[in-house]
Amino acid sequence: MTAALSVEGLEVVFDRFRALKGVSLEVREGESYGLVGESGSGKSTLLRAITGLAPVSSGTITVNGKTLGKTRDKAFYREVQMVFQDPYGSLHPRQTVDRLLQEPLAIHGIADGEKRIERALDEVGLGNGFRFRYAHQLSGGQRQRVAIARALILEPSILLLDEPTSALDASVQAEVLNLLEEVRRRRKLTFLMVSHDLAIITHMCERLMVMQNGEAVETLTASQLIGHRVSQDYTRNLLRASEGFVRTA
Amino acid sequence: MSGNPDMQTKGALLEVDDLRVTFPTRTGVVQAVRGVSFSLGRERLGIVGESGSGKSQTGRAIMGLTPPQAEVSAKKLSFDGIDLLSVSSSQRRALRGNRIAMILQDPKYSLDPVMTIGRQIVETLRTHEKVGKAEARERALEMLRAVQIRDPARVFDLHPHEVSGGMGQRAMIAMMLIAGPELMIADEPTSALDVTVQLDVLNILDKLVAERGMGLIFISHDLRLVSSFCDRVVVMYAGKVVEQLKASELRDARHPYTRGLLNCMPRIGFERHPLPVLERKPEWAT
Image 1 (tube, chains in turn cyan, purple):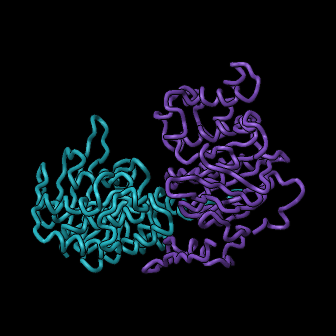
Image 2: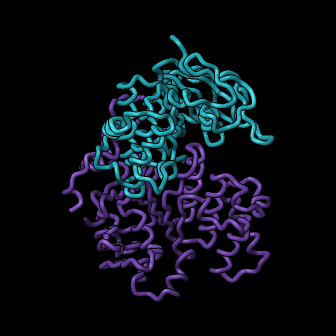
Image 3: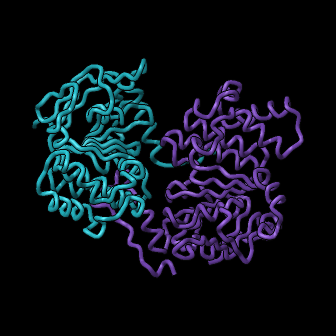
């Protein structure tokens, strides 16, 4: 098995605050890998460091065998795309869906834009009727579908998903999760997915890493987590919390 | 649909009958709440639904926080025998924050960013009760202790941006409880918080509600969370109540919408691919 994405001893420092303290992980090709932890654990920072949105102070990131330098080139963004948490903030409010989807195509100088836009919209279940609407005319779930279409339009092999459903209703969440699973199967994508919800991670991912305070707590397979075969108290606490509220007498 | 018969005792704290909230818009009238009825004793009632189901507007109408352009009507909307729709706005203001309190979703937006946490709590108390400064401070500190803030004297002097989300929400609860309300409306009080912190906040809320014998309306989109926390659950869809049931009987929910809401969430140890999605039928809205 080759690694689609591997991270070695990654450090991210903001001023004097160490947001990531030497994190390593390896995501195999076609695998879906989860990152869980509470806010401030560094899980989103890890994704942002990979895409070049957070300053890497040391460590290496390798994508499909190529080690990344200080800056990311266009070829990188053709391989790796990201879907952000809040679809209300990640779509330009004054651009139509069509314009939003054309942007990455224009940047990368892709010719068959028309066909790709149609295909991407179709794939996320929106259809051509949504092409000339603005973000504010869409519901949260529809917006997240547009964000997924935008990520897919360059035909990347790796998707970074930063809490893609936490801003959505539970019922809409199911639809978006199903959509993500479907595109992953169809396009044989590799996922690196962040969530604070253990249930979502065990549903979507084969392996996962639990993070706290910028460090890896432990690495588990989904079935280990489901069988409660965990070694760290922190993970146990997360598991207990995910079972819902229990009244203490 | 009417309330659960055994809960409609004479001493109902809150009675809501056929509540309607309508918003005039450029494209016509939007009915956010369309004939909601329930009654509440000193118990925990959950209101569940998706965004746009009218659950928050129901809470806001009870609190008297409906925007001025909207219209609220009801056959009955009474709190402890007081008709909330006919009282003057000054009487309403006296109730709000004193006997009826509301916790909002995100402490980042619901707390005043330029006022220390302590001052905000003291302000609430002194608006509703005649107490001296020193005593108000004492009571605010005591309240912060009650919501399990370890170092209340330090937190008292902090601004909201200096505390974490969980801490901010505890401060919000402290502020809402200090006047000793009889009815508490919590609108998604834990949705903005981490899972682990969520449970701490719920535990605090649960204990205080039980100790003080308050009525609680817990508004959330998370049916499972609500059912583990509340005695009764009202399920709303498109501004209407589609089902009302005891939390313990949730497994036997009849309405397909309630069942759909229960089933659509991934659960640890229950593999289902793809996840069942909600089918929304137009006849549920009629």
